[in-house]
Every structure is written in C-alpha cells, then in structure tokens.
Length: 368
Image 1 (cartoon, helix red, strand yellow):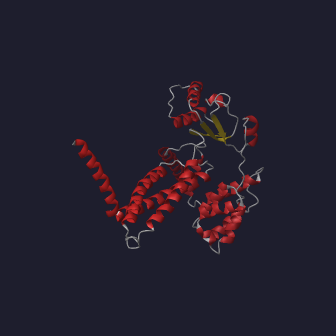
Image 2 (cartoon, one colour; image 1 turned 180 degrees about the vertical axis):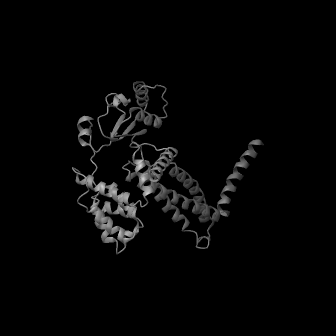
Image 3 (cartoon, helix red, strand yellow; image 1 turned 60 degrees about the horizontal axis):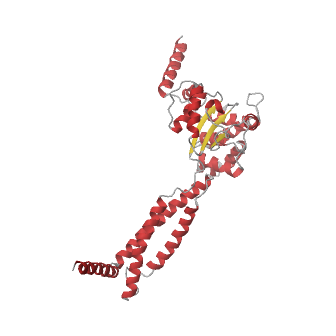
C-alpha cells in the first residue's frame, strides 16, 4: 500500500509539473525575459573588465572568452523562444502541445541563465602574472630600513630585528615563500645591493622578479645588470593632445584658445609631467593667461647653465605652475613643503608648526 501511495505521489508530482507548464507559460516567459536582461548587464560588465585588462597589457583567460560566446548563443536562442509570445503577452499558437513545449523550454532556460549569470559575476577576467606585487620607492637618498619596511608592509611582515642585516635575512626568507612575486623598486638613482636589502636574486629564487625604474639607463643596464630594458619614450602628438585636453578641459577646443593650446602642447615636447602641470595651471584661466604661458614656455633663457633641452621644458612647466599659485602665502607654503626630503610623508600638524614659526619670524622682522 505504501509503495502504491508513493508511486501515485510521484505520478501526481510529474503530472502537476507538466500542467504547470501549460498554466504558467506567461510567468515562465516573464522570468526568462527578466533574467536574460540581467545576463546582458553582466555580459557588459565582463566586457568592460576585459577592456580594462587589455589596456593594462594583461592576458585574458580563455574561459572568459568562451563564456562570452556562450552568452551570445544563449541570448539568440532565448530571443527565438520569446518571439513566440505576442506583443500583448499572448501566444501566437494556441495548440496545447506547443504551449507546453515553449513553457517548459523557458522554465529550463531560466535555470541556465541564472547559472551563467553567477559564473560571469565570479570572473576574474585576467590571469595575474604574479601572486604578489610589492612596490617600494627608492629616491635619491635610499634608506634601506625604509625600503625594507615598505616591502614588509605589503607582505604583512613584522620585523623584530633592528639591524639592516637582521631584517634582510627575515625579508629574504619571506620573499622566498612566494611562488611568484614581483618586487618593484621605483626611482632608482644609484647602485643598490639588493642582497643587503633582503631581495633574493634570480639564481636564488627563480619565482622572484625585480622591476627597476630609473632615468639613468647606464645605471640600470651596466651597474644593476638587468636582463631586459624597457625604454619609455615621450608621448606622441595625439597622445600629448589627449592628455592635455583631459587635464585642461574641453575649453581647449574653443576657437580662440585652440591654436594657442596646440602650440603649448608642442612646447611640452611630449613630456607627461610638463603636459599635466601646464594643463592644470591653465584650467579655467582666461585667454590672456594662456598667451602669457605660451610666451613663458618659449623662453630661451631660464637663468640656469648646463641644462638640457628636456630638463628645460620640465623646469619651465613647473615654474609656470608655481607662478600660477597666485598668493605669496601659497607660494611660501609650497616652498616649505619642498624643503622636506623626496617622497617624505609630511605630517599636517608638523607642517602647521613650521608654517606658524616662519610667519612669526616674518612678523618679528617686519616689526624690527
């Protein structure tokens, strides 16, 4: 008897489900429509991530490309199914078999679309070339303890040792624990013994790669013995203009400013620091200021001997930015900040104390 009841229950469940396909066809179609629209949004999000990854020279996982193709095929199939529904939510065919088939297909596709949507949302579009990337800024006067501290912070490492040698030993051990790691040493001015810092060489840890940035090609290629050099060129004409326009605003397209803006960009000689500095200084300024700026950038004498053409362009752009600060108090504050070491993290309270001290001294001199 129990077996009979169980069999009848199973049959009833099956029949009920099949009848449900007939009665809830509009509901199934609507669910499919809704989920397909959400899938399309997820697809656009994934495409945006792919675009960003490619601009960053990252490789795209094959699974991501396959997912996009699968989504396109699915959307086409769902459109064909939904095309059987009239513009007012009524089916063109009234045959029960056809209604059952379409409704059942729509219901099954809802489950598929949910699975595809979840898969798309979980994608990390690119395969990262390294498990860890740890950067450190070196600057003109390298502080080995500071460099070790920067690397340790990125690795979640705490030093108990006080000496550079002791910290180097722990840092080297920690870096070797990573299967694949990129150490970035930015703004290198002089030869640095990486072993002293605690960075293992390639022969000591093949999974550790080191990226150095420097303006001194001889230092990088000969003294630091790098395997490969990537020389960064100045920006091209179109790149320079696009960067300047992004920093200065659409005003550069105005008929009265456009010819002046083009000449200013040329004077920046494709140097990003010159372009961004000048553009920000001229943003929202009247045309006469732009004309004066062009004259300054064309200046032949910068009052400094033995300065190269590229350094001259950078100097003139920075001077223009400094002159545009306006108030003398602002310029003095800028000069005060420049007295701190390169890449120094300036404490605001400390800066305020120094500024007040200078102001008091200035007032005493006036009263004297």
